[in-house]
Length: 434
Image 1 (cartoon, rainbow, N blue to C red):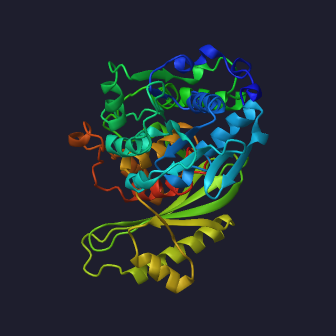
Image 2 (image 1 turned 135 degrees about the vertical axis):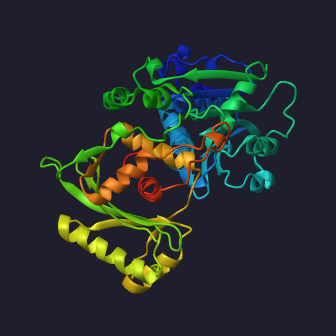
Image 3 (image 1 turned 30 degrees about the horizontal axis):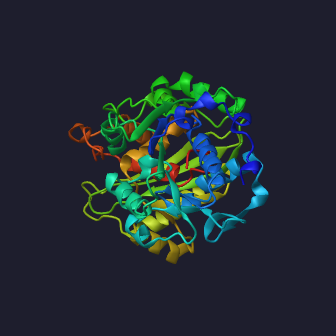
């Protein structure tokens, strides 16, 4: 099989990453986004795979649904880079890339529940390498240990060890488990640690379009750019959002047509406020908060029921479509809210889309991504003034900052939550990270 291998020096500079030279069994690559970590690892894995007729590679992500559009396609890209795609069968069910001649393969697993992988077996040969992609998504060291123990338990003899690759973008919180874990490996002889950025792209893999986008981040929000693209652990600070990124509009722009409207909902009943937000997406990819609905039950004897909110939501949406002449593309609501979802479907036959809550810090990061690109605007009206004021007061809880799971202060945050639901339920549409 070796004669089919295209010389790796024709594909990428050997010195681009020292990973090509290290003999250590555990290789940790961290850095900013677009720093070529995944490309280098996939090329290295394919090269080694082609040189071992009995070796298999296992590729892992925490969330299984992202495998087919990320690490699977990355391995496929590397195979095409070597020009050996005809030697492989690219299977989608199960998700597997199999070498036709040797029957060894690249296996792809989601680690939503690490324990479920304990019974996994490889029919032909042995596991030669593991790749934990987006390591920061995993819940902690225990996730990694359970999976590693499953796949490195086979004795390969004195000459062979399972290579384990870890790649991730460092969270901005220095107390995130993955940042502390990496620091703990600094003097471990079994671990090779390497940090990279997009600035080391000596071979020009990154497009001019992407580099211009990165420059926009750098100009709009240098701190966010340092974290996002240099991979620096810059900390969270006290205030969650940079309010300079909330741009007011007196009217819709004449040179950027509205394409569609999305509705996001954060509901409350007896003691908590309810907020609806209408967000317009434009041809240029900008987001405009068109208007909002805000109801607080405070100091009210007779508080609104789900049937009342159902009617209010319908009337709010009708007002938006009539005012702006665009359809509602998606209706997003907190997955924990069942009463309004059921009532609205009963009343109007429309299923509100439930978005599961992730860690607050992760939901916030996606909003910060949109803001740092300078793509968020608000029409000047009373409802959006409430939206602006709530975001202006939104803060991290200082008692939780030195933890792996920092919290926010839960006061007057209903439009804030609603905005987070909108962004996180429309990541692909908004061209944000997945």
